[in-house]
Image (cartoon, rainbow, N blue to C red; front, side, top):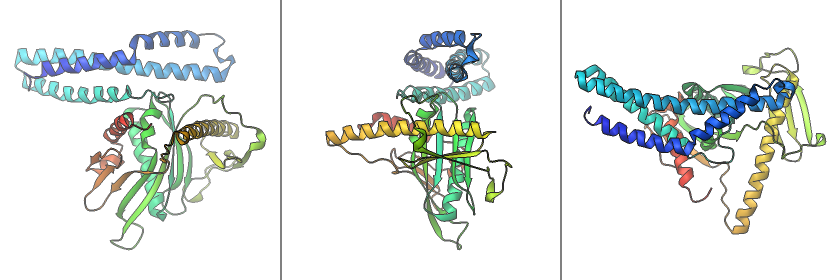
Amino acid sequence: MLDELPAQVAALRSTFSDIRAVVGVERLQDEIADLSEKAGAPDLWDDPESAQKVTSTLSHRQSELARITALERRIDDLEVLIDLAREADDADAAAEAEQEFGSLQSAVGDLEVQTLLDGEYDSRAAVVTIRSGAGGDDATDFAEMLLRMYLRWAERHGYPVKVMDTSYAEGAGIKSATFEVDAPYAYGTLSVEAGTHRLARISPFGSADKRQTSFAAVEVIPLMEEATEVDIPEGDIRVDVFRSSGPGGQSVNTTDSAVRITHLPTGIVVSMQNEKSQIQNRAAALRVLQTRLLLLKREEEAAKKKELAGVITASWGDQIRSYFLYGQQLVKDLRTGYEMSQPDAVFDGDLDGLIAAGIRWRKSSPVD
């Protein structure tokens, strides 16, 4: 294996160089320099909203560059390690080199998938909402399992996450939860998770040995610093305030700081309860509502174009993935055919294979 590694590493470096060119490292460096200059301006925080946008974008771009730089350094180090292992005929060093090569192959593959994320909003952070569907306690428990799955996935990658709202069920699990993943390309990456997820297992809540099928819906939207294309008249919304609550209805806040905004024309409801004040929760809820209305407007425009073209594809709410926790023990994506035979690993955040397959499938799909 060690004799073959130099050629394999050379091929990996060639792939990495192609990816580096697609990402545009020089452009990225210029953008970071420009944003750094803006971030250093003494009057930056005179406009907090603009300042937040500058600092957030700068952080994301720096993370992108750091990821590419780190991979390039690891490839350099691997070549040195291989040379040392061959010269010293060191079996331990050879084993380390083989292990690092496998790790680098995976990392470069992940970066290659990122280059497929060239949609309008793909580079943005993501807001994910999970809602339980049919299936009673099994469905609310399944929704909580999905929440933990995505939080563990983000934790594995070191992505900052903020749970913005959680509605607990009277029995097990949650009715719904909304969380933010603040990382570069989080929206583009997680957007392939949107849709209906199905769980089949022996129910821990019903009679013994009874198989139960339950459902949960996952919604993924990009986080917008501002949605200036959407103006929401005050008369179009109803704002309700209430106390935040924990599992089983237990109060975790002694003031009415949680906020629920209902957009009356569309019926869209957004709740926020995890910020410290009512003002912060209202601002966060309004921003998510603006984003949803903006995307709804874009979807309606796209649907109209497809209708005029004679092509109508109904995709919202379609089942995308099944999780089998009895008998065969399997997770299967119904769009890509990608399967994993270790559901426990998937629910512990091992989603990269499923997500990568979804991104590649979407990119090659004839209908966007």
